[in-house]
Amino acid sequence: MKVLGVVINQHLTFEEHASAVARSCNYHNQAIRHICHLLTTQCAQTLACCLILSRLDYCNTVLPGIPSANIQKQQSVQKSAARIVLQEPR
Image (cartoon, rainbow, N blue to C red):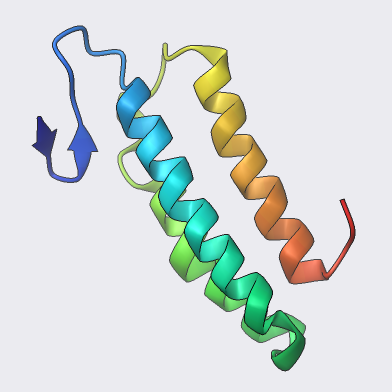
């Protein structure tokens, strides 16, 4: 079930929500990566904040207590966004 953009299951694990957010953010990371060479660093940072970090921050108050694997997914997305903005290699 999806309520206000948060995927909820019967056990309230929020694993599906964390995976959906990571998948959506990875999509936007790739989109920014494709056009990053055309953007200034400031513009790329603004895009990353608007498209990626806002999705990660939305409803994160429901996430305490989720498994660390799901937190690592979101941290990976955030690190990837930082690398894209700064145009750094892995």
